[in-house]
Image (cartoon, rainbow, N blue to C red; front, side, top):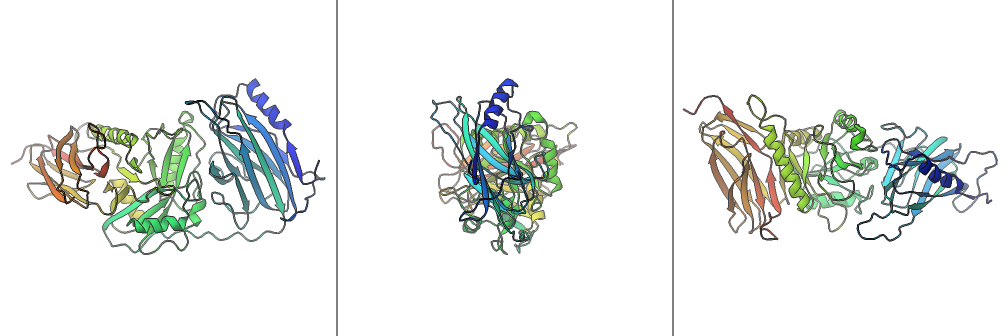
Length: 529
């Protein structure tokens, strides 16, 4: 056996046989399965030499069967003196018939502090975005966290996203490089406030991916694209990692607020943690049936962030939201270019608004979830800021922007070229804007007014209430116009506005150009006059 490389296969053959014998073919999202340990700590293991300096390498091969647990952990025993922990992996992707799942294997890393859910051992995640990574005290591959490679048992997390019927053969190569270590860099995080314009409408995109997960843009390219799109704030939202939180140094400014967060990517749906404290990692290794999501939603809240289910009706495997909305602060009803799953998310959100205004005893709406829109941009030609959430905030700061989103003082627009003004006024001059509540007698006349600028010539306005769309009218060819409509609180418990393009397919709804959160009309006791 070479002093520099060792192949380990028996442990994984035994693992596969044992999985079948013990009936472990059902996915066990949180518990996973642990393989036999790969040891580098034996007395006879002396590092070999090479162009990269002293190192040792081991290669592990095995096959995961269809129905393997969500997470399979490969323990690696790390000795003293290691400067770098490096991993590469490959797996077979045999052709499969249409409609049959092929192989996809994600990967990540936990250090000697362990794999406990919500524990401190997390060191990085790349999903299926890259085939190799490394960590050392002073640097790490994007998606992974720099820091010392301490002795102890580390774990490589293998996550079979989908498995072909014949199984998923894989090969993992671990290289430990020995030598002196450099000091870990002090993290530099974005400031919580930008100059801004005081109380104003600020435009943002809270769902973006860089090279720190499965995106192709660097943080610098995202910041440049955000400025080009007319955005005032963005949120760092990589899949299951916080490594990008320190990647924005020099990219913020008086004109751009950068929030830190995460896209918590479970097997039962994705959820954005928006504006959490820098460096706060939120675990994702659970399914809806594990009844754990509430714990991690509360962690997001304690870290100062918002819980926002993303693309809740997306059709990709594992993307459809299964955890319910009880723990959410808002919901992403518009994700990237308008598609049928966004239309379903919109309908579900509108049904939830109707349920909110049916609270016992009257007195206005119960708890309701504001809508947000984000680009989910990964790479060209994905457009950063299409769509964007436009928020009325007291200042361009983390606290004020999140407060505006949480209160629903926002609308969604396809670009910075399009602006809306929307509200309701009663006969006494009382006014409520987006996300607000206007109290008036049940039969008191209320004027709803929408002003649009920057729309395209094919756009139509719809005013929607708890009874459904009650007014539809085309905008002028200029794309700018004012629409007014009179109603009463007895007739409409809320009103929201849509600006839609002409349908691409006759008989189907057109894509959105803009969408507002509702204005609520609360009926007071008595009658007008």
